[in-house]
Amino acid sequence: MNLFSQDFNDGDTLPENHVFNGMGYKGRNLSPHLAWDKVPAGTKSFVVTCYDPDAPTGSGWWHWVVANLPGSATMLPQGAGSGSAELPAGAVECRTDFGKPGYGGAAPPPGERHRYIFSVHALDIDRIDVDERASGAMVGFNVHFHALASATLTAYYL
Image (cartoon, rainbow, N blue to C red; front, side):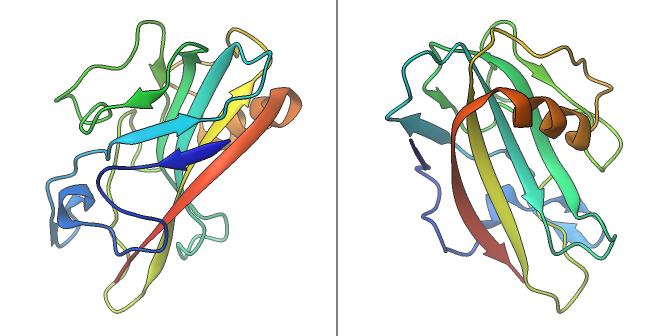
């Protein structure tokens, strides 16, 4: 399985469009375009996440969590997590560590370079039992038991 974006390549600096608008940052807070291919047979749904393992929390930081994307989905347009483009029917955005559903862009402490790991997980079930209040950890727990394959794309921001 592969994950790619029209907005950046693996290992690139995250463009300002995808940086948080707040906490001292003035980005556009747009979720990036993401697309995937080479999906395994038997895929019934997907989960897409963005996670910063470098956040000074002891547990990282969930920037975006989208569950229950239909198995027919192959991409999310730029802005799908920011309200400027639509998510596929049935998809649910879960609570991020910003305290609400939806995409929250990069916002590392000043002077710190962080990784932003975008992931797509192909699942063997139609949906996981989560709603917009579920945490990234709860979604990850469910993904653990149903993932057929996963792919990641990592960007950096300083």
